[in-house]
Length: 144
Image (cartoon, rainbow, N blue to C red; front, top):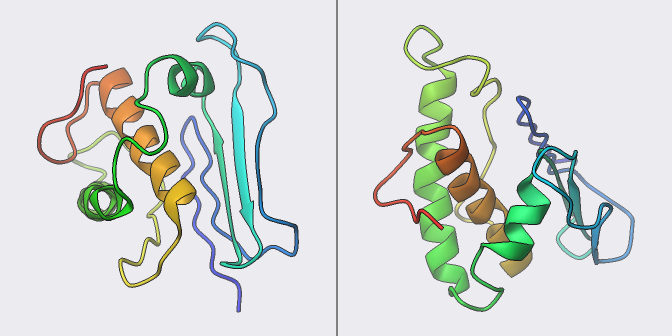
């Protein structure tokens, strides 16, 4: 059965079944923040694919975010769970929160082991999103 998640705003995050080999690819090299960046992870074993399309995110990820391995997977999963819960609450309240930022819910299941890379990208996108759009989803957000 396919599991899919889409966040549509200035990004797309899609978690869906895939038959591709596990891979991580950045389709654009780091560019100025105004470029359209695409980051894609395909994991055959977990049958999930994450695609993030957000102007400036790839550049920020490579230049500003802490490197892979800085956080533990359990830390990332914990933060992502809180971020996604608040994100989904905001999607359900378009009269309070900007519907152009919170368009679709995210189907992030804490019981599923998405692996380090998926959690790393979701966490860093949430940090980037909060800083770029001056939003606070949960707790202290690094200002990197």
